[in-house]
Length: 314
Image (cartoon, rainbow, N blue to C red):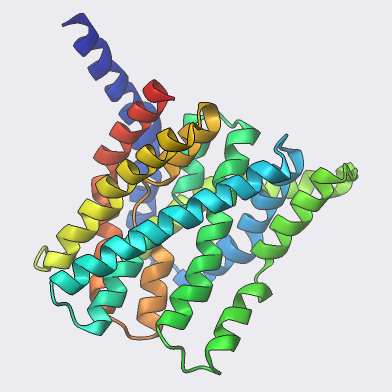
């Protein structure tokens, strides 16, 4: 009985101290968007081209990670996504979804919000631990690369062909910030304070702005639980995904912060980017948008449980 009370207290602590602050910032974004009609395009550009590269660079530059660890995280993330792809495609086939819905459903399960949502969660769970953050950033880098390469190609881009769609990712500063951050870290290249200081100021602004952006992006999405695929997306993205990751981590014998950070990272809601590319290429945009908001809302409960499990098992 006493252990059950302690467990419930810990769950409540996780919800109040980690999950609730995140949803307060998302709620502020929703309110501001409804009142002021913020420019979502500008917000997205600020996050992608200004704030995220600074955070990625500074965290990778300051972290005490190894290149082998970075590759381990990437390989784990790749295997995890492949399993989700197989399961989601098999489910879509069993449900006899049409090709457009099948693709949108699969993307909503595979692509998760490892940046705007995952980074704040990691920051709160691990108390700004640069090592834990570097793991989350590696996951974010992989997810962004996958979304803007496979995700776009799968939607059959008509703007200049598939190759141009993939190469478009390499025009984004996220890739170069990651590469330079790792390179400078591994080679121990010193950076002058007059460069590090502004980068640090910019990176510190990311978490609040990222969550405000999430709120603004989902502010006008009307959700109706009428699609069976929507229920399946919630189930696979928030419950099945973390269970698969947990089994994989235990089988691989991984432990400590790396196992905790990886497990928690797999419990994030559907990526906003998956809805953006669905909207851009007119591939079931309504379903994709509803998947984002539904998984975001339900993640307040499922993520609390996953964090609790991660901290107790690893």
